[in-house]
Length: 208
Ligand code: B1M
Image (cartoon, rainbow, N blue to C red):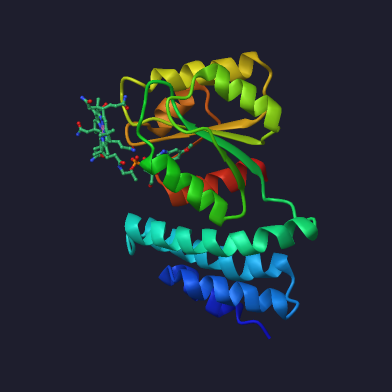
């Protein structure tokens, strides 16, 4: 019987080789891919996210855990596809036009993947038109925009306007150090998160 608690623990510790080995063993034993994902990998990342929120662990631990999860996901993904398992939601993310900061955005993307979202990452310095074009062609339910500079924050408003003008129905979430809930409300975003763990919580409520 596969030990999915040990798999969750391997993710929490950021132990890549244990995460990969337990994932392989669980699949060889015939454990359902969805169960390996939900009860092993996502269960582990959920705990990492909760600890991060409480400042019990910091960015390096989250990155190491996310890397272990990523390695195990490479083994698991083909099995999930075969089993027809759908992601929790599709999330398009990028850093706003003119802004090259991507460490926080990458962390948000990793935590979303850890929570079972399919993430399409457009990188940095993303023009409003690119958000629109990609939101339309991928049919995502959520668009996330990150900004780290007060000077690039107005670009978020432009991107939101462009998405709405183009009739994109995806919910829009924003974040980044200078961003606040008040600013999100002002520019018509559907959600705001102060950190990567909260971003996952908000994304789940927006797709629910
Ligand atoms: Co820049 N930089 N930087 N920088 N940089 C800041 C942001 C700054 C506060 C430094 C300072 O002056 N004290 C300042 C901004 C001031 C302001 O506007 N208020 C600043 C500046 C001025 C600049 C330049 C203009 C400097 C210059 O060239 N004169 C320049 C701008 C370049 C550009 O973007 N066009 C610049 C350049 C750079 C580097 C390229 C050198 C580098 C970026 C490397 C990279 O990202 N690949 C850099 C860095 C590293 C920083 C600091 C030191 C760290 C930012 C970071 O990664 N934090 C930063 C000062 C600081 O914060 N101490 C600074 C860690 C990261 C995990 O946190 O990104 O906040 P953060 O993400 C969090 C949350 O905000 C949230 O979740 C994350 C995880 O919990 N979050 C979201 C983020 N995005 C989200 C999206 C969501 C939800 C939550 O939904 C979609």
